[in-house]
Length: 377
Image 1 (spheres, rainbow, N blue to C red):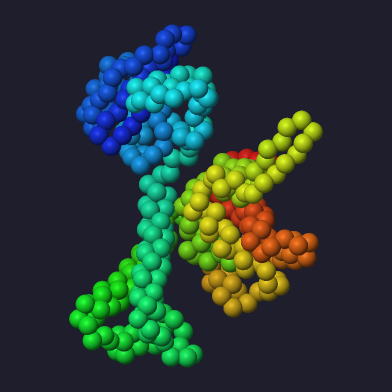
Image 2: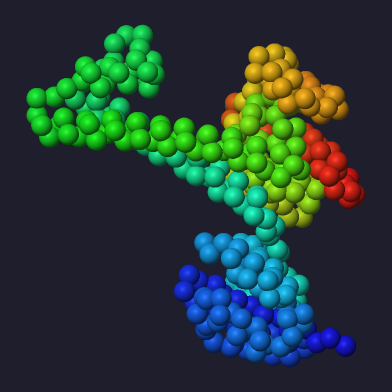
């Protein structure tokens, strides 16, 4: 009978703390090794046959490099969710050695929750989407710095001129000047930063178009199918797919929980108490879903960019029917919640939660065309 060995790894940029838990045996620390490929290989060779090892470590800033290295050596590895690792209420001592031992002990007991590890295509697309999101945040900061600088010194754009339009940028560049060289230098720096970030976003969006076109066919098919929905263009669809990966691994309600859009609850005995949304899931996914949900405050309609997307992408009638059903269902939901006194933010959050159900339906139907597997009820 095979004797499995459960290994807990507390991973840092330069070091890895290692602990081992044998079935029915003690949990012991094996010390710390450098976070280098050769050191990891030596550790595996000392612990025994690779097929008998079950390793785990917490998801973190070091990414999935260790997972791929261990898999390459033939070792089964799980990347676990840090927030779901059991914690004792009275435990007030935290060290790398103790963390590694706790991982090994919990892994042996089956108390850890593994996260989905993206393949190379999903991770590449996700990093590009997040780089574009970071650039948009930098653009907002750069614009705020410039606008507040102009406001402090009494420079206001002419009436009717829209902020950050081409005319606005030309006005700042040619019409706004200061006698003090220090102020002029500050203005030029703020202005050039706004231009630089705009060019950066343009480059990233162009690269995103190329990445979607070059994506594996199953991934590209899901991205295209999701664009049948109102409020979900290519950028939103690519963000959803890169953050979720395989939709078939979820049930609809669990996907909603993963997004953090479900209500929190604290109930005991006969008391039932629900609060705001948990916000414990994927923040990137939650943001784009809520943004897309705002489109459903308007009455159902098929035209403009949405009609052009559906026509150009040559989507199936089944997918388009689901998207049309979503418009009716979610708009009706929006009207019902607003008429009952809910504010718009609460209403849109609830609509976004239901929108995820339609997204799941379209994505799973599309995935089934490429992988034959049962769909959760």
